[in-house]
Image (cartoon, rainbow, N blue to C red; front, side, top):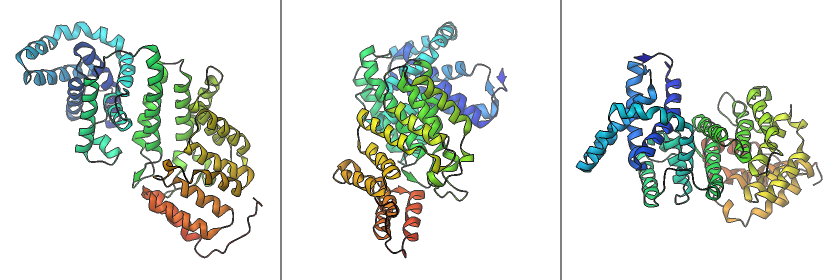
Length: 426
């Protein structure tokens, strides 16, 4: 029997993404061999994407995927050895699948949590953790992940293959790590989700400023993590940060796709529901445990979202929060943001002085953001010639076409302007 409950392509895609980690978790718990099971689930997802639009979604879609993935395992094991073939045939016994299905259902959400930690295993590099998380837990295909990070599909397939091999070589088990290790690895899990969101919110390269599929997937996975670990305040803080930040997405570009700076955005286009949810989540979280960097960043985002207009923004509070963030999680990106807040409170020259401390930081050599912020502050300080040069340097350093256009346009507007006196006196 087929179900009509999910009859649109976006809804079906969402269903497949929800079911993918559940099916993978069930297979890995039964059989081990994460790499083979993950490949089998991908084959099942591909089969569903082809058959379900034509035939309708099965009444029990999870069982359908589990059966198809199990058949894929049979094919794999048949090519391996007769012993594997017998084991796979036993695993495919319909009565056995039915008998364990209720048991698997009880582990469905927990399996997703185990998968998150497994994909963020410390033996993997951050790019591999990102790719494997999106594929195994997010249910994205290799082609989708490759497109998201603008690399050839073959390159991404090799990266994912190597990641699975390293997990197998490390002897990783399909269980939650011990508490001490879990707390250490949770930071990696949160960082991976944070990176996925950031790449979606401001794409590092390509024709568009946003990658809505990545931001949506990051929010979905962070919701899952928060639901499974409700006592982890930083998981809640990260979810709040994503909601409060993503709420501004519709106003960040105009109808032509050009970037609109925060100060000039039409705030009536901000997502009030997302802001309310993020604020409520942050209110419940602050004070409930140790305050970490994601909670502080969420608090900064909340201050921005509370302002009805740019001139109503409480910049002294934002600057104070960045001071706390610099103590909790110091780094060049935090200093960059503090410089902007410092300029709004104490004048552009004060912001430029703080920005100058980053000139010798090699970590800023591969990003255009230092020159972009410098250009903005130089423009505010009344030095259009220097600002124009910094805008052009920043434009040459970024692979994002919208940011290139924005920075080049800002430089062009300054071409004929003479130097002016700093109106702030500092």
